[in-house]
Length: 260
Image 1 (tube, one colour):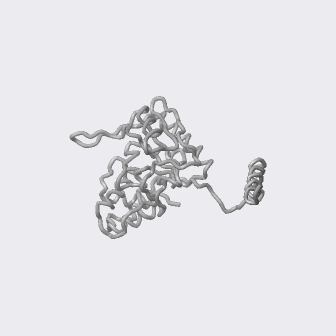
Image 2: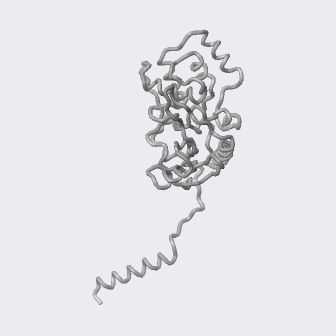
């Protein structure tokens, strides 16, 4: 046997020994400076039936960690929470971008809306489906340490291109369950009094929306991008009118909704 062949044989034996013994890692020293990689939960609707939703989310180019059916409200886990799902797309909240890597996506089986000559007709969510969602949100939030201001809709993190979960999604029920921030009773009226009938300038609305976490232009101009962000905020906290127009009630809401 040549010297080269002998060296190769010895190397193979050493590698085989390592493989048999397994990789040895000392895990007795744990850093205190850590938290979950999961920082956000993003809520969507599928715009599909249950069979269509399962097909798209398991065989298509998009995915989500969980899917909740409508009737019955079965909870399906499609992606392990420790792995990334492709549900958020181009997104931003509190200056953090591309939230797929730091979020859990939950899809609700819901048609979304249909177009009619008089405008969009939105579809409601069954009570049982929302009850299942609330139970799931409580479970994930407890395990992953998700704070209330980090439970969001797709329209919050992508207001220029998304409207789900839509104006009929019952955010107030989530607030009543202690999952998201909501104005205290009487706070909106108090804030309206502070405004004293004076509508703030567009730049003020932009600054307040940015303070809440929205990605919004800060140019002092009431442009289409700013209107889209205003509409996303209104859809969440004042769903009976989400026209994107800055008004006194929206200004009061921006002051009344708690932020972290």
